[in-house]
Length: 197
Image (cartoon, rainbow, N blue to C red; front, side, top):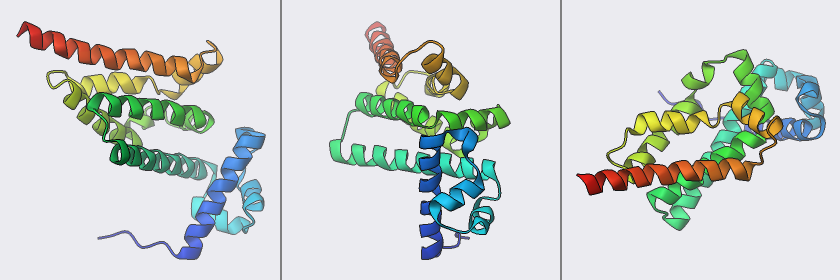
């Protein structure tokens, strides 16, 4: 059974609402985000926003999923245009994830606070894990790819990522350099295993 096709006017309203929510987050911060304010910013009725998203957490998760969709589309375009190696694909993916988490820290922190273990059961986490497993397997066929995917994804735990950015004062480039070191280490371990076998 396929999902119903969204009406064109409903799709337009959804995009207007999500864009308005992003604008409010960028200008006023999460504390000021309300469905009433989003409706006013989007130029739609409050009822339209409530019917579509029900409450603020519903809007937050819709924003997270929409941002995830944009990330996946950009990654797919990169792979189609550049035909990168497994190493470069993994590096591009992890760097893109760092930017995605940094851009959505407030939203992700709220989601983490409302359901601390929910992240691991979410569709985006499962999708990311599967993608990383595939790239690690290609980069290092002898590695325990599912375990390494878990370790790599730990870098994006919202509370840890926010702590690194705010308390430690690390910029995103530093985090990306650390991820690069992990990728290089995975490849080097695989090469060493092959030489010793």
